[in-house]
Length: 357
Image 1 (cartoon, rainbow, N blue to C red):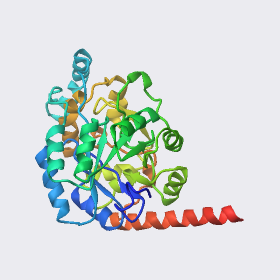
Image 2: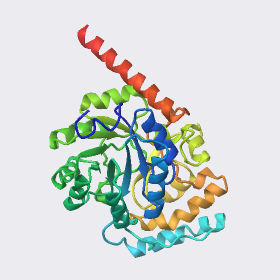
Image 3: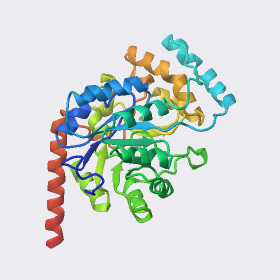
Image 4: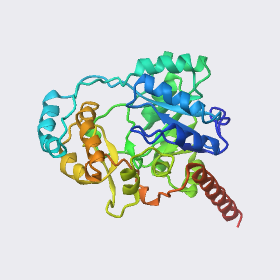
């Protein structure tokens, strides 16, 4: 592993930050204690809520960990399109007996307040999704000893991260579960995401930054493949979502391997941004009509998703999952890290033997 990441974990295994609850302090601590690098997700939390989780995590482990921030979203969505979608969701609100949320509830996710806390009380790593921070922000983190990682989905975004002064990039392939971390949500590029192995090569030839690789990774052999392609470590989300330490809703955990949910697709149905979810009733009925309007649609559907969870109805929940979801293993997080590392070592050994035969 490169000097930007080498002393953070024993194994090149990173637990992805999963906003919405899964990446709780217990999961992050278990991963970091086992030799991986765990990440808290600050997205959708208040600044105080993020700080409390950081403090709780420090009480569980002395190992390095990271915190992921959502970048503020520029501009405003088409209010008329959001209103049309609101009207379409009226039946859902009636069914779940809950009001729709306020689409204008905020666009910055408490970004500045979170920055202030993390600069005042630094953590080992901070990563960013949905954009690239300003150079002075990244320089401020460098001064306090925090490594910075920017999520990218293409070589142009990687170049922007390098110019801004990031320490590393997280290269996210289209296979990844949850939100695509694109810096600019352009509806004209809908469905044109790049697969992880091709993307690693493109980014490797575009910048000199160390790379984490994310997108559908579930086995040690896949980790070996992305390391061979040029990544420094692999970032896995869905693989850790089903662990007992994960705070994901039990219905979400079961759905990941439930034969009822046969596949995933990118949808705007829940948030207004492309995000990979298991295909359920909500995705089928509303995905084709959801506008490009993040975070307006996220705020609009937040109450519906919570009501569906309370009603024990996975057909109305955001069931984020990567393309490899059927390969999930319900192992304790620390054991999963060890299993992945053993699989990685075996894959590397087999490659070495094959290369000399």
